[in-house]
Amino acid sequence: MKNGLVAIILVNYNGFNDTVACVESILKSAYQEYRIVIVDNGSKDREKIIQNDFLNKHTDIVASEKNLGFSGGNNLGIQYAKKKYDPDYYLLLNNDTVILNDTLSELVEHCNIIENTGLVTGKIFYYSQPEVIWYAGGVFNYKTGIADQPVLGVDESSENNGCIDVTFATGCVMLLPRNVIEKIGLLDEEYFLYAEDTDYCCRIMQAGYKLVYVPSAIIYHKVSASTGNQSAMQQYYMMRNNCYIIKKYCRFPAYGYARKWYRVLRDIVRGKIDFKIQIRAWRDFTKGITGKVETI
Image (cartoon, rainbow, N blue to C red; front, side, top):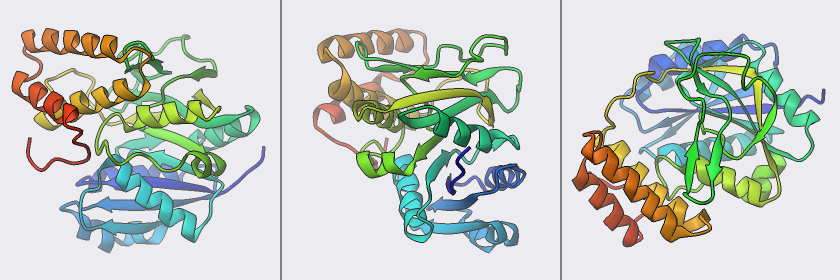
């Protein structure tokens, strides 16, 4: 296996304890050619991150004065790592995850042995229910503009245990070779939150690279296994940004919008989302408003 330096980018936003736990899991990795870069994304606990002896010993810490969102925070970390370390790979890893000691080596190994790989991702379980799958391969539908995780919430089984090409990888864990980022550029910051991983996957595939799912690379994600109502912020950015994905990548955008509104109206009737927020998001999309909005 061809080893290379991996820059691991963690974006922290008011998640000090999660970030510490994630770093602790990384430090147990069998693969030792890595550097950890923590981007504090304008969070309230920034001083705890900056002044923490444990984190300062094992990581580089980059502080942003404001919340740059998922894309902006990761881009800041990538740019810092490129300038200081010029790594062979970049691993975008959510700070509310923990990995196993062989996760990193599995990601790097498969990135090297599979030809024309543009992104490698792993098998993700719920941290609170480690036998339940959160991600085991994803699909982007070019007819509807929807990125789907078909086995979300399914108990672990013999299924989805083969290394396969996928058309969607969650931003929770993305190993990216240096040459891919150099060719397609950084993440699109106009989304701010949500759908930026879908956009990046589409750009990677448009450039002629593969997205590879590696089930032997295990990650545990601290998200709820129960499906509750979304926050106003989640509702707004998911609606608005998915419309931009439809506009940019759908073969027939009008069909994509119609399918989107069908699902939106269904969820409104079920009491899962707020009608006014959906209308606000749609109007902002039609006006071309991107990035962070101050109030929702």
